[in-house]
Image (tube, rainbow, N blue to C red):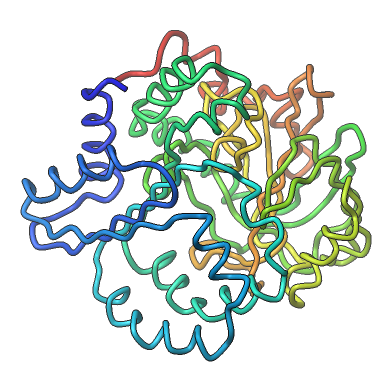
Amino acid sequence: MKDWRIGKTAENLISYSLDVQPGDNVMIAVHGEGEMLAQELVKQLYAKGARPFIRLYHPAIQRQWLKGLTEEQMTQLVNWEEAMWFGIQGYIGIHGAVNDSEWSDVPEEKFRVFSQGFKQVGHHVDNNIKAVRINYPTPSLAQKARMSTEAFEDFYFDVCSMDYRKLHEACLPLLELMERTDHVRIVGPGTELTFSIKGVGKKIAAGKRNVPDGEVYTAPVLDSVNGTISCNVPSQYMGASFDQVRFTFREGKIVEATANDTRRLNEILNSDEGARYTGEFAIGVNPYILHPMNDILFDEKIAGSFHLTPGRAYEQTDNGNRSLIHWDLICIQRPEYGGGEIWFDDVLIRKDGLFVHEALLGLNPDRWKGSPEC
């Protein structure tokens, strides 16, 4: 792996994504692989006058730990760690997956114990501090993308070091249009969905919380979602693989849910009351991510896609939904994936994955010719 690319990525995370200041306490959490990036982050954070802290998580060891986890154990752990998590100003999560199915045999109730225990800490990290998540280019991730490890590394570092400031500027017209919109209608193969986004916050995601990035998001008014959605991008969630996910909504609630593993899908949706309601609607706009990789962090940014999320809403785009889950399920609407349309207040804004609204043409991939800027 080329050291200069690691250095550039670390610099972007520290200077742009987190805007680290001297004296900041910054937690670096490595899940699986990612030691080279973590080492470079530590070096650059010290040079910046910040104080780095390290956590290393091994997925196979975590699996064994989760399988025996008790509520009393979680209470003790949170008591020990809460002061640490509330004492940081920045968080960088590096996710270097080796085996996405490592936790597939962890019982659902154990995930619930863990999620409930760290609920307050997770809310604090999500909403009150500077935090960013980045995936690390492992052979496992390359395999999911059906690319050689070397080719995937080239693609990964290009996408992660693109000019996210420029992308943010390009997203502003879409943000402004969403802020004026009441009714959204989405149509496509197996999809006929309507909902309102009036009065709910809208946000641009362009490298401040995730890398790679590229979406504009909000949340549906809680009880306004009606119709059916068919998601055409496979998804890995809680250690299980899902495909052909299809939801039917009535007054905001998922009343019917099917997939290749319908039983497991409904177990997740029955986690709590909020899991059958939505917490996010987003439009993907990254011009360099065009095809699914079976990795949500990449797939939710695909140009020509949108995603609808069962579960918890973000504080900045809060529709009132509360849940332990937050699961982005994605549909690509470019012609090779079946096409589709998005309408805002009876005005067609995107057709077959390309924006047709005059103010949004700058977000189409053909306006971003060539390699990402490094």
